[in-house]
Length: 382
Image (cartoon, rainbow, N blue to C red; front, side, top):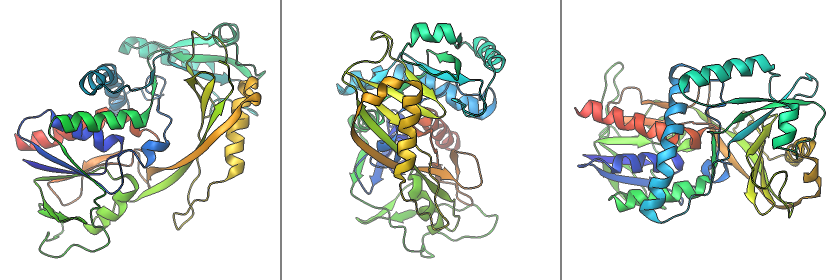
């Protein structure tokens, strides 16, 4: 069975690795750039699964499945490839505020809401702790803000390096026989000719091939994981799925010394700003959320990046002494008018799967997405 995957961010790479473990599949991945160059390269890799307010249905199931899979996936990839995937296993601390004028948590949450979530997670086999201000000061003395009344600690949520993860997935998939074609674009600026597929309302057709900048490619399955490129690809196939960009900017700060307890360095988040320890007194801080105009254009605003930095300083004042070593930005793929992500067959096609539009949760949901795609292919094949 021939399978073509279009796009090699973290989601495309995860699908390639997942499918590479099944005998009898001939898998080729096409990526017009190098791997992990789009939204994956800009991500901070903060996996907010257990601390998420999703508690049931598909939204929770794919988070839970991914967090479980990461517990085995990271050592599996490191053992197979010899690559190191930097991973912070000290959890996530979310700051809580009672002051509606200056919330450090988007939508002011009361302690009882989090205590209820803690009990739900306990029943599901996961841990959450709700800290009052005294406990927060004990574990994270670097947090010093009068509006903070406590925190929620999620010890089983992770932070990892998305680029290192993606490159390890590519390496492992290659070792299992997957072919990667980097620098090869799937042609999406031309409408499909009639010999590719006949579109008839309410009739499911099979896509026979797609054109690339290298050659025509035939396959039994086409999997679109192209993020923002998915809009043009689906338009080419007469069933446009609108994925729009949302810009995120982040900073790399160097303080030269470790904040708080050197032996306890979790990710700290408040007011949707993440402070990610990188070791040696360095920290990632991000990210902005900047929406496009009607032409899908976004100009990165320096004042919004400065605002993110000032919010980080607001809850960890020692960061005011840190130097900015670099800044970066990236576009996140957000589905228009529907929830993220989009994991489904493209309308009117029996063999085109969309696994795209993960918005801000591509790294978190990559393992579960790969599992869903595998099931879609194998269920139809059985």
